[in-house]
Image (tube, rainbow, N blue to C red; front, side, top):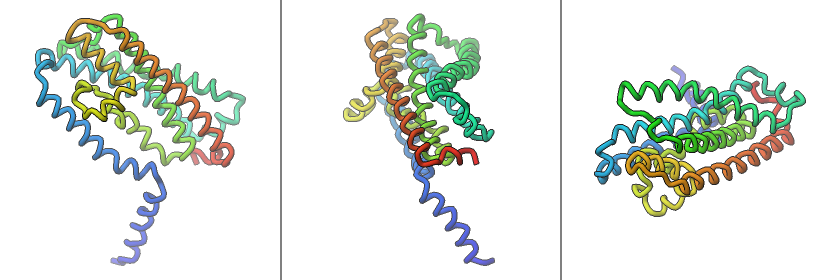
Length: 263
């Protein structure tokens, strides 16, 4: 056994990791997020007594809404990644198609992929667990629209990273949504977070969406101010996502890296 060859092969992968920020971020991300997310969930179940009456219903409803957000973002990312995997990426930008048309097409198409996954899950939860997300009523439409806008925004940010960093950013596409899971207060109220984190969390639409979901299911009341606030925040992030995508495309075009995508 030649240890020099083993060391050389290992060194190759070490240099590959060192030279790629997305890869380093991916390695750090999973253990850290798991600790934060499950730590806050454990704290919630330890301190809370309000939710015990309908814990299953609230947790599953949150899971369905969160999956809708997850599918919205991943569907957007997947369609963009499929262009790279099929080596059609260059053709996409050579064709007389505007960036706005690409964004609009991906945004519209992603909703079909999202609904294909969500509707069966929501229906299965009714006979198996006696939980119906439709009990939320008319506000559910606004919650889903807000989640979809924010999910597409996350998809835009990930595709911006793919344009900027190339396929090495692909791991972030799968993990992007989990970055916000601890701050989104999906399975627990915002009060579980430390006060300084609550300030940051309230800047995200997720907190307002899931807080309102719990408010409707527990107290059977609707706070439309909370819903409108979530929609406005989502639109702001969406505009920022579009701007970042345009900047990433412009930078990649100037550097001439677009031609190498998918190779």
